[in-house]
Length: 553
Image (cartoon, rainbow, N blue to C red; front, top):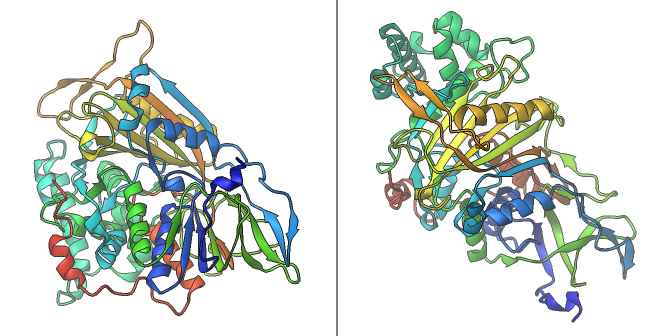
């Protein structure tokens, strides 16, 4: 049987919007458009949802990386079809330098028990914009979440982990802080809370506009007088700055005081927002891919049509003026729409000239995509023991220069256990990421972090021990031994707007606020007179009461 005959006929053939790829930005846009009454067809050539935001079984994960590390060959040649020209649609490689090590072959036999995030590490703050959108659209009812148990900061090659004192109780319990340091942190956090008070307080409690525009690191040093240790905690483990902030002359992305304070408030508001989520951050059961599937379900309820395993081989352009008109499927069927959204790995055929979302004349919004030379280095490790005894899910931060002198960006680490269905019982999945311009330097940062945290098996060499002197007593810490690992480079791409628009690859941030901002911006450019998800009939306040009733602490 001819391959084209095996694909179903799609009816109707005309839509307001066709979306190719089921990544998180595409899925949000499809759901938003359908909520505004648009007719939407959502296609994906893969047999699963998610594209570059998917959570995949181990075998599918490695296969996806390999497939998207090579340019695709066109399935069709430029041709004419009636009154349209058919322009081939291909993909560009978005992953490279993939290095995978298997230390325990039995891991491969449990492939289907893993749910690995292509875009890890990533968490949800309980008070961030994405959670607000869940509540507004009520898609949270189809998901379950677990709390992130703790955050640690790691400095030095020994892999010693110190708690991040991110709350009043955590500060008092932290035995690694001196009495003076505890008082300094308490006063600083009080200042931040007073600054965002209800307006009835004294004007002197507000941070001045001049200070808000200054570099955050200078504010912490000159105005607050914090030690280097405390500055490192606030800058890299709470405000989550990417680049080293101490040397402002060479810093690639200086964190302003206003932005740093905003992030501290997000962190503060997230803690305890939901009664059964004691921490500031949560993670969805079965992986980040559940988020996009929830938006797809909402779009389907609103009338969107979903078809997986459906390759699109070309775009239809008007012969007269070259405007976009529709798509051609591998089956040979032609479908038509007013607008088209492409996943970020697709190459726009010549002739379509969209406007890029970033940068803008005013400098735009830092989405981590402004410098096309910047890439994300991602790593995943599988172990049989936790990084910290009795801790299931946790974050670890390596500040700049904590691993070696030339380390200019922080390395983020996120451990997940079987209680979020990330892996089989008794195992842990650990994600790592950092930004880089030089691939060799970026991979060195991730590999050094892996060496600090794990024992990498070598024939005849036992697991390494290290001394943890930050607990109540000095204890001997056994590093978890690696069972499987992979390190790879992911490209960052810039979203584009036009009759044919494209979305963006996962950025290097831990949270989703910037990605959601960019997605919202693209929607308003496409549909300037439409509301981004009109209000549901029930209020957010009512939804919050039971929004995360299935979330366990």
